Length: 337
Image (cartoon, rainbow, N blue to C red; front, side, top):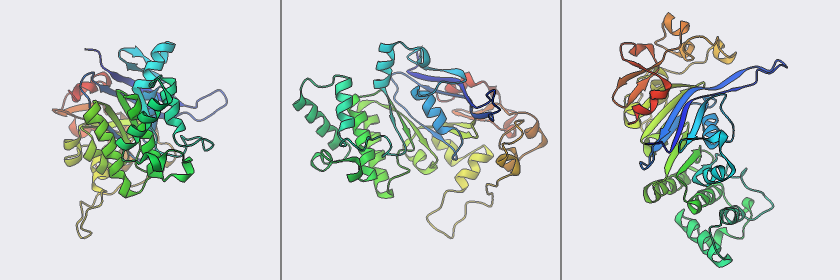
């Protein structure tokens, strides 16, 4: 069966031009698969600068991979025809981190909804379009009478973000790529926005790619997780196993940094540390986490570890698991099967 969407060993390199611009590997050899007919929620997690947003932009076709492919229904996104790309734009929707930047401040908030209805010919009349917008807003917990007719600056961050979720609801997409959708809203609204996304997943069968640095919400909403560090995939698998029993030292340290409800409790003594090599860009050889890793060995600095299939629905890029069979980037999708 053809996958609905597949990122196949994609890498993205910025810079490295003839003018001496520094070459930056933002993402290296990352893979992702969303099956057709099997809606899923996959979290892409890691620190700032780990390559999460780069992967999101590649999936959305905003930028093209340096190597590898993004395939939608078996077609290379970068080689789609006009009609194919229009269908792709409707079926793969984005919700970005900043709920203000996506609006034109000179238009009222409903303009983004009206554009979607007009472009994809969703309504036969103005009255039908108005009804569709009102229903979509109610679905995400907004009152149409308090939202329609207002300019973006007259709405709160949470309201602006929920209007974007309502826009996605209007289009009935197959996939939503949500890039840090709750990081810039009040804590009280995060649950509402995530609940709206989960409603789309459960009621409409929409698959979600949830980009986040927050492992708590990743654990709460997703079924699978991909951990990134400096553009490299370090651990993939079932979110329950990865968060509750992390294997890669980086994942363990991130999970250990999650605050506990009781300030008297401590998860452990391991802490993330910054190295001079990391600040200066590293040596480019071996494991990228080696200079911060409490378990690093000389081998870690000599060669990059592959992903080892450590158990069912789990793979980890760490030499601590060298006895397990290694897998290629093209086989990462099998981890989630």
